[in-house]
Image (tube, rainbow, N blue to C red; front, side, top):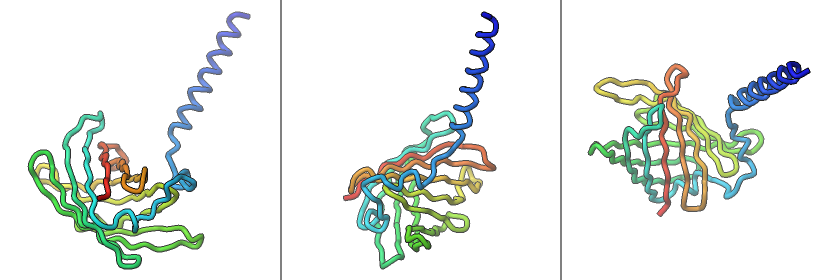
Amino acid sequence: MKRRLILSGGAIAATTTLTGALTGCASQQITDYAREKPVLDLRQYFNGTLDAYGVFTDRSGIVIKRFTVVMNCSWQDNEGVLDEDFSYSDGTKQKRIWRLTRSVDAQGLAQYTGRADDVVGIATGLERGNAFHWTYTMALPVDGKVYNVDFDDWMYLMTDKVMLNKATMSKFGFRLGEVTLSFFKR
């Protein structure tokens, strides 16, 4: 009898572990945030001047590089320009200009496409509740070479002035690291 209980307990533990592992593999969906507040409208938030502070971390979470960004953003109807000036902890500078287009799907929900000089192809994104999720491939220069790296990018509006951003970088499906940013609207 004692042996049966131990085996039963082991089977329960294995089932619980397997269920937890499978649940852990499920990724977040933009619809998970549909009822969250404050409601994000990228055209309103990314309009005017913003400051951002961020870090690049490797797979183990070690900070590889710190950076700041000054963003000058403007919109004309559903066309936006996000002009970003980066300053990195190693003294280097970079400029990126995003050109965004907002459209509305059949259910009346906002979706975006974006282009920038160092983005390969077109970035696509969806906005729901307080969140924005978009994916894109960026050509990143590293030690004299350029690598196309995939970004899975999530933004969360915290207040009308503060947004948090977390992007996972991967290549061939392997996680390379993360970019974490905080945006502050002036």
